[in-house]
Image (cartoon, rainbow, N blue to C red):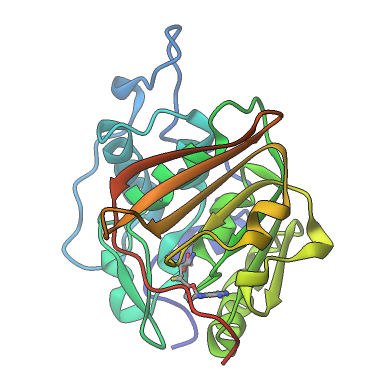
Length: 263
Ligand code: SAH
């Protein structure tokens, strides 16, 4: 089978991918909140075959909004990127459920809710698009594609060659010219793209590497799962301000470990 089941049929016939289409789900009412009534109601079909992926994504976006994601830039981006293209075809029918999924080599793609939450934290306080963003842990490339919708340039670094190549294959048909994939150790960040207006990690370490702080631009924000003093992994947000680094520790999370070196 040369294509993933079902989904791309409609889109490839029109020649316009969803990244070019106006996403259905995000409608704004005068209060600036999502207009739920403007969104189509869709029932999930029992299998991936024959699904209209736009409608299923619209449902996922409504759920994200119901779970508290408010940033319209983020909801819009989540509605545009076809998550099912980034997972094995056998898992495509789970792609829009709020679940993490295996992507090979022992790694996982985060739940849509976690991806949206982290990107919302990254965008907080910024108006319009972010500038250059660094992602540590490309994995299958899904989050890089979402980031490409909210930032002018995305640098995404992966330490496992197999996943770096998988992400390249997954992203190629999307022609996202502002996404730059790098094979390397993200603990060193990526000085060539610095300073960054945002740094986001999809893997959690015991501490925030110094290189990440060094390569964050003034006013920039860093969002990363990190082991806290309490001994568990939590989302940590760091903002670089003229007064120094401001650090917030948020909810507990479970991410794959941040490892050094490449493999
Ligand atoms: N954002 C990804 C999630 C991938 S899971 C996606 O959308 O699919 C986290 C990834 O971080 C794994 O692929 C893992 O190999 C990678 N990783 C862990 N430590 C790293 C490091 N030091 N540098 C780069 N990538 C790293």
